Image (cartoon, rainbow, N blue to C red; front, side):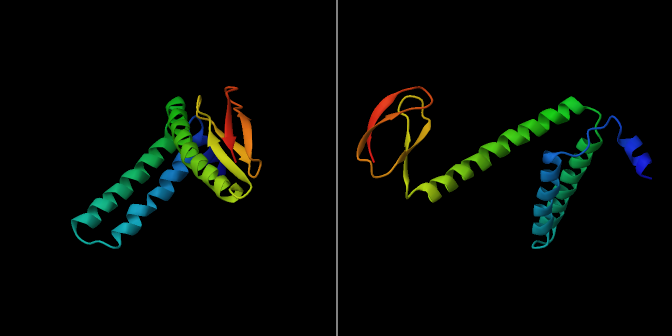
Length: 134
């Protein structure tokens, strides 16, 4: 049985992070449909089924390059969101020891130790130097 499945999946894309996201995201309208009745419930069911069909379409697709592009698009968006929240988390936990500034020239975030008074900050991105009080 395992060999037959492996043979069937030969040359197909298979699962990836975007597919896993779609499978978990399809649970949201499914669970929301429990709270509604009538046409709203049917619409939420339709959305759930459409997401599951699209996930399986991607998994069994032979257009590997197109599916890789979709997955890379998803990973870039995911990194933008998770990277932002990781930065905020870092600012919260490091806020007592450090001050954070943006470079006036290139906009890179810079971390400077607190309690140093007036210091010259050099941007690691563009080399711009500016004076800040910490």
